[in-house]
Image (cartoon, rainbow, N blue to C red; front, side, top):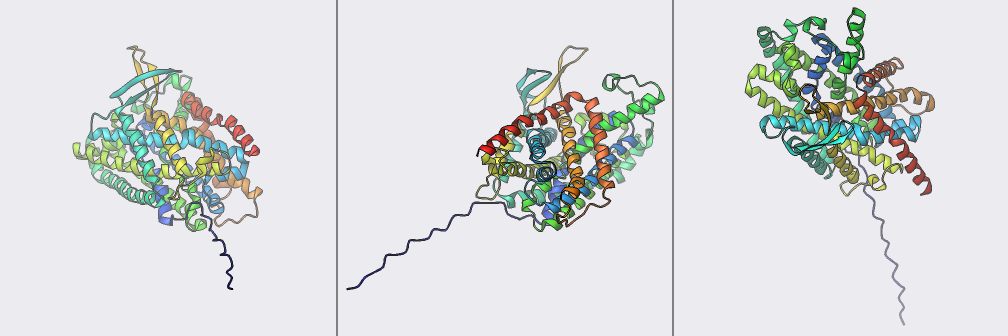
Length: 515
């Protein structure tokens, strides 16, 4: 009689949950740095900065000071990035240096206004330049007329805002397809727009120089350092005092120079975005510092040269009064006529498209890291089958789209009519000051962690320590105080949005303990 033993039960291997993968090379990481920095700012913000300081020399100083902040910040951040190459980057640095509450406030600010506000501003800029090719796309062509919200704000929907929203949703959708798709888009658009910016510089410094000599450009017909000779008059209502004597005029210039840095700082911001993808960079101890230093050095140099091209090509009045602040377009139009306008519009559309791809790709990784620490909505801490944080991407896209809608509203004293603010400019002032506070805390974290985690491995150590971090912290603090005084309404809203994170943190902390 034969007997058979029962079959052994089949062993079912557990299905591995999708997770982030290290698929970004040094080139990819550098393209994220450059691509996230070069967007719309370099082609637009010099108009407002030149109006504030009134002389080409001081305009270049505003950009140079922004460059000092960027380089000293990158030198400091590189140490932290190599030391803690994890998803979330700056959020992780602040959490480790100051505790989870400060890390959370950074991530909260990033979601509410800093990252999403930058995405919104760049999308609005993309729509502005689309309007050069298609005139019906305009901030004044309303599908839904602005309606007052109270407290000096209104909300409406123009064709310009529709294009901005569609751009945000399109890039969010492509990044849901996986890291490979996102980095291909990033690399292609970054190479293209960097080449376009180099082309603008070369054309401006060679052909624009000749045009400027004939037409009286800022470099040849304006005083470089005395704004009074250029018709500059500091606004007493903005300063809070009458600038009449030499001392008060010098103080007014210094204060307005600080505010003039808002645009350059916005244009040079987002270099920290590569740290958000720290969990996806290959050989991060080597590649993160290198990508930060190479990327920031390239962009700061190009930005200074681009502004030099503006001042040798255009009269100061043309820079200050460029239609819709399109200084880059005005420079190319002065050289090539209407053809230059179209070329520049296409180049800037490419630039802003690539910039927003990098911002959208990187930003979602911070909210993902927060959720993994039980300090954000739980589903935000998951990844889809393509190994990307899908819920974080979608949440970011929806809120950024909403931020394109509100506008400031004031009343014209002469006509009594409502005047609606420039969405792009107000977004810059919302986010720049609040953003810089967290940049300053990140740079200070280098000093804090040298003591708190003295024995931690540091593949890269900050060059010029501690002088370099202290330079950054000092300039950043002066800027924050200056902008808080000169633009309390818009910068104050940025701070208030950050402070709403305090009760939110307490709620999530309580839920995390109960879980």
